[in-house]
Amino acid sequence: MRIGQGFDTHALTEGRPLWLGGVEIPHDRGLAGHSDGDALLHAITSALLGALGEGDLGKHFPSSDPGLEGVASARLLERVLAMMEGAGFALGNVDATVIAQEPRLAPHLEKMRASVADLLGAPLERVNLKATSTDHLGAIGRGEGIAALAVALLVPKGEGA
Ligand SMILES: [Zn+2]
Image (cartoon, rainbow, N blue to C red; front, side):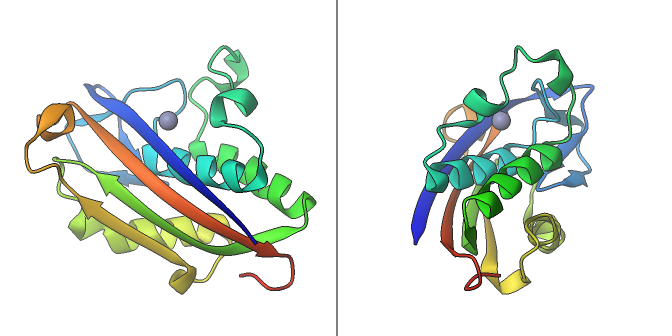
């Protein structure tokens, strides 16, 4: 088995849609970034890369690559899933936490979970999503950005999702 962890954070900025877990969340601001800024998918993708011993997102998808401008983060995740399959692994499970003061994510969590499970090609019970705030502490607590943490377990192909 292999385990990996991922962390990502993006600033909230006006004039951008808010994408989290491949779902557009209604909000007056969205996450800034070279891609669509989906911090949750980035944390999960980073965790998969970690489990594969394949470095980080920047190594595979450099922000200097004009071809990745505005790319849907789901496409990056797809590429890493292909690497995972090529390496002979399948997803065991993913557990992820989104840290946001605003918007309140609880009403959207199940939709985000279903979206992430769909993108991973995994049954729902192998994908767990949590949302928390920082209780108004720090930059995230002031609503300046959103962070996400993820842990992924990979198992030999044939024993996973
Ligand atoms: Zn990111």
